Image 1 (cartoon, rainbow, N blue to C red):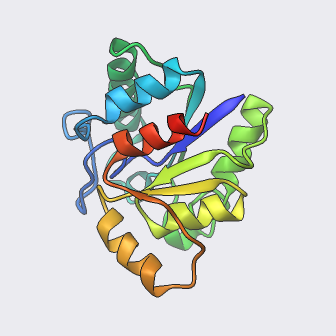
Image 2 (image 1 turned 120 degrees about the horizontal axis):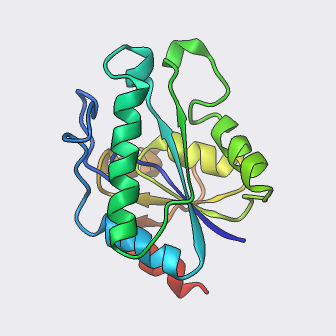
Length: 181
């Protein structure tokens, strides 16, 4: 099974320090929906791993989150693709759960639900948490400059990380993933 793991906010849709709280606020980044559909049509299972502490902070609820994810999936389907699974952590950073990235609980959930191994899968993110989770689980991290990606790119330069490929956006990362086939 070919799998691509995506962070959500800042990779697929615009991010906000005030949180994305509704389907109306959930705005896809140019080219991201088509990139997901293209990967899906090429035979990749698309799995999303996203921290959503806005739930734990009572900024929005699971019904609002579900509406955002229905919008995401509907747009991808309209473009001919499929999002196979969305896994999220609703906890606060202080909750010390196993599912909040950079911890790998969401990735374990994916393996259990899809009866697969994620080792070697591409993991596209925009934050240091995404890169750390990918590396901790044996995935291939790909950083995009959208969302918090530019800040993360600077951090990676200053930290002792193995080479992480950097792309302008999800569309360019998807082209790279497809070119490796």
